[in-house]
Image 1: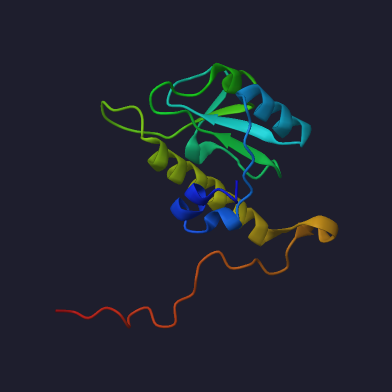
Image 2: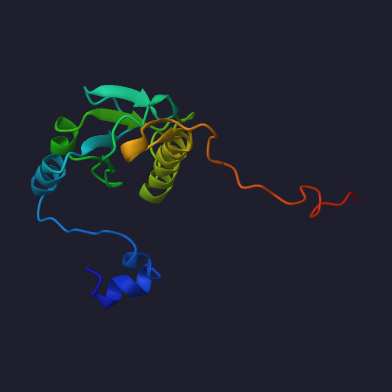
Length: 153
């Protein structure tokens, strides 16, 4: 997919740093993920008969390989993806609207997953030196002078 000019123009070269694999069907994709040890999580505002959690209540640090599935705005998530997933995650919302567009939903969900994983990695080591770190890695960017950019008017 990296050779497709249409993708490289749109993605502003992110495709150079991202692994992309195209599948002909949902089933083929799920087979590939399961064969490679991935755990699948689907997103939906509706209870799907799986372990259902609100986004902030889920623990996304339990599995090294995690695949997050998002449904399209018209049809939602595939019944096959729901059936073969381990958990259904909902973004809590208030009001009459009960769904977000795909870009907004994926940004919110992937931010929470990345935030939890970064916090976990700052506390625990991976590979040979497993266990808790003596000094956690920073999870917040330090600022030289917090008041430098602000003045009272």
